[in-house]
Amino acid sequence: MIEDPINLILYLQLMKKYNHHLAMEEARNAEAAAALAEVEAERNSFRDQLSEAMTRLESLTAAADPAPDISHRRLEVTIQDLKSRLELDSAVRKRLEVS
Image (cartoon, rainbow, N blue to C red; front, top):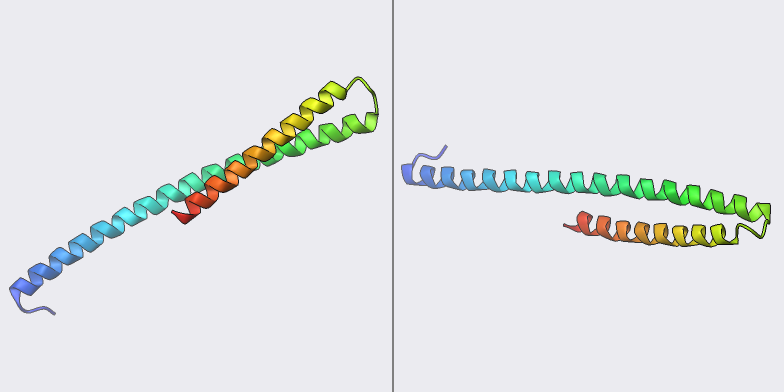
């Protein structure tokens, strides 16, 4: 136990600063965890959309009907867009994990 009153006061001030710093770090970690969960949910949504688009593309390709060429191209563009979103999502998630 600290017996000197001045040292005790200094110790208590230091502990108060430490507890404040610790609380701030916990709040930042909670924010980062919430943001990460949101980004992961969005990523999963993009993956589902990509899977659905690829399934539709495969079914259109299997039909071999010349009419779906426009639909086929649209689906390819949609797939490319979803892939780009996933890449962006991954970059954002990595950035959030680092901070």
